[in-house]
View 1 (tube, helix red, strand yellow):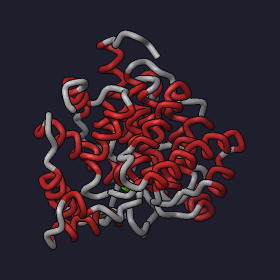
View 2 (tube, helix red, strand yellow):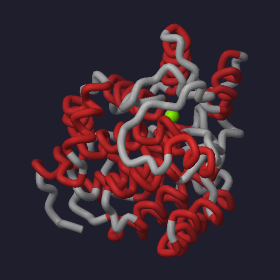
View 3 (tube, rainbow, N blue to C red):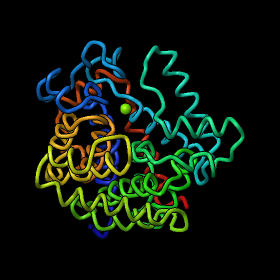
Length: 334
Ligand SMILES: [Mg+2]
């Protein structure tokens, strides 16, 4: 890893990480929730930003290139981090998510809150504390929206793990979800300093094991082990990752799978995105996480201009000011 932070590289890689969330999300959108053979039958091999098939169970109503909850909640979390810094108001964050879901329903769309977030917000509404509301949340929602934390936090595993806990436990309090989000944030944070994806892996696993050590340590270790296994399996290819690691919304499957995909793609963000879009089940979230991690380690030069133009034409994304403002928090928050 480079010893001196380079402001231009930090800005470029922060923007690339946020853009990677959006590109991976939009690429995976038409295939989300579908089995690999259904994806193949409906689309052949997905090689670009395409519209969902008619009657898609979740994505119908979206157009080619449109992003989903992964990108929208990443932006939402970035804004909450920026407005609360140096603190974080977990109850207000819960309200942000509830308001977001109401807005999705108003737009007539069907890609609503994931299972952990939904259960946690219902618990909050019943008066359960923010510290306890997400105690059963083990799915990948914390990891899918954690990129802003990686941008705003220096690459120290302890700092990353504690910041991840602070922003995630209201919805995702289970060890594997926190460990998964910590690992992703740690890759992003190191990438901004100039590291390659492969150079980030060891400390990402340290961060996964460190996440709230007094809470569910076995689950943290299991998540770290699962990421390590996915990285080992990666050279066997896409089908082996899908079969042996899994692609469901469970953090132990999809987040580990995203790590394996980036290794399989030799750290290339676009290749990572193509693999994720076709791998099956939670393709949009796997793509968002994989492309963000890879792009944080390459910068914008790793993202192809044609798909980026289509992505920006399909969505009103204002990622540059967010990246710049999140970088101002880097090192300045506890
Ligand atoms: Mg999604």
